Image 1 (cartoon, rainbow, N blue to C red):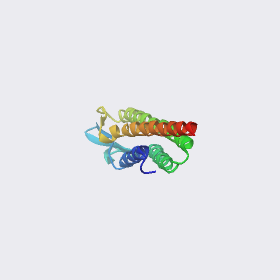
Image 2: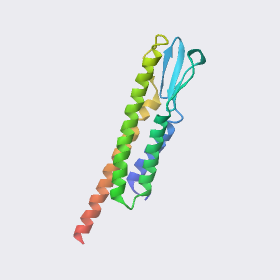
Image 3: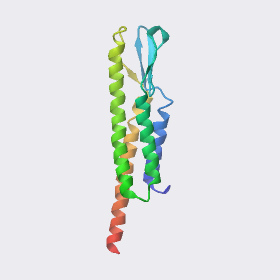
Image 4: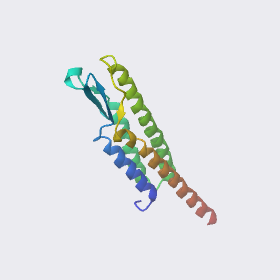
Length: 156
């Protein structure tokens, strides 16, 4: 299980997704107040109102990490593993798209409070793209393993 490269790729995707829970994804300025956005939502200063919570982003990220972990554990059933990783790839892509749409939607809401600067994306926002690459590489290597096993079965 651990000697396969796709396990390493999926573990890296899990680690990067986990780091998103501790990093700011970006910030903006509204009425000379800094508004940070994280995977949990938007942290507004008290002068601007209460914070805006978006738990579904954290839920999608957690689901992606869970699927990666289950995929690692289902190494004996490669067909199931391929389907799990394909779904995980789509889920991670949906997470990235939803994140940027949530930021744009909230920026529209912030503009009603006053003039808001364009969002400045921090490291966390760009880190959301890296698990896509690692999940794709894991999928490619799982399919390569499956082809190798099928070729060996044909020889027998």
